Image 1: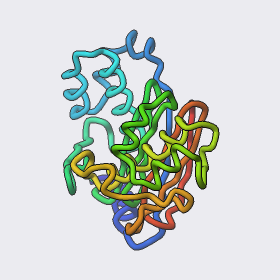
Image 2 (image 1 turned 30 degrees about the vertical axis):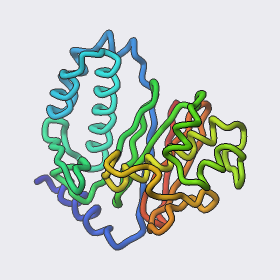
Image 3 (image 1 turned 180 degrees about the vertical axis):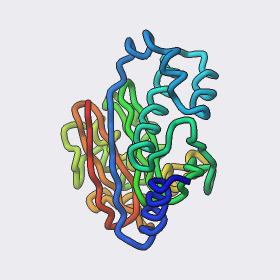
Length: 235
């Protein structure tokens, strides 16, 4: 283990009882760039992601997967001084991916259309991004708790008050971010827990939700209470 990685490990492991610090970075994907440089970029991404990308038959899905892998390895190299060839992804609690070389380093990825977002820091994170577009409100009625569905329909205590579709995406990203935070994913129904929307809290849980709207996208982070969050949205 290099001295730099050792010090990074000490930092992330030693921060477990300190204030959480989370960074969020988002970038737009230039599909033409990935199309024209696909083979070159495929060789540059870390081995675990390379094998995953090669399994996609849909080229656009492959480009997205490749882009998320390159962004992740950029962050890992900057934060932990680990070269791509030495990145090893392992499954943690509930199958949530983690970094073998530094278990105290937490990350989570999401994408929508041509935008990729990553959250990373010294505490568990879950992140989701959604493009605002017309939604089937029957899905909300089925998946949302009563107070959440009422917020979508009527805008009560609204933070995303422009239109119903924005409010739908707001609730959806909050719920997705929480299940990604826990690592449970779709194994638990989205209507099995409820969100206090004005307070940005999941009822009964010691987590906090942070939402940003950028253009036609909504991004929500779920992480530990009282964490410091730093946004870098480059799209």
